[in-house]
Length: 198
Ligand code: ZN
Image 1 (cartoon, rainbow, N blue to C red):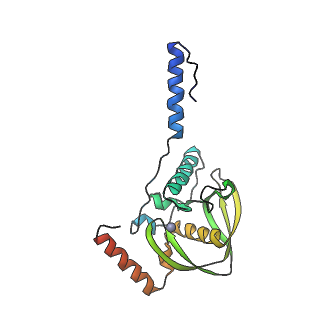
Image 2 (image 1 turned 60 degrees about the horizontal axis):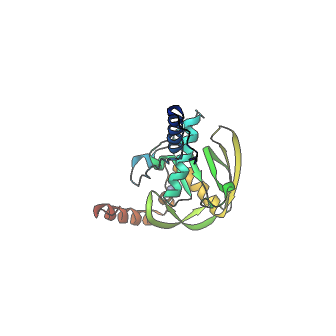
Image 3 (image 1 turned 135 degrees about the vertical axis):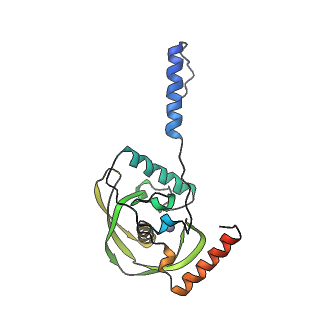
């Protein structure tokens, strides 16, 4: 924090300078670029997380920042090129702190009903297709400290949970489409890649 009273000793100036650079370093957001289909990391099952340390907490914060920067409500570590079972979700898009979810090594333990709604993905920009999902799921996961917890989701949260957990297993939402629809989407992407628009 800058103050208006400046102590006039070299040592104090140095201390202020160090404190300022430390604060700047802490506030600096490291944004990760989201990788796009057909990057192979998106088709790879992520490794389970076994070390719950400060680096992991840092990565989780960077994932939230990267997700918000990309206008997303969910982001999985493989989408930033890290093949690990880590995902963050915030269906309120930074409006409600209670909606911020960190899911490490998540497993769907219950699923019920069905939904058929349009989905999109940060790794497949501008591709939106209807996907069949369970209407309600219960997920067991660990938080960034390694503590186990359960979360239940309906509607949008249910879809986000299923979509993100799929990413941790190398599955994209287009993998749930019919063969015909999937082929059409892939053809469209190939064309975009050819035209340098992907
Ligand atoms: Zn996605």
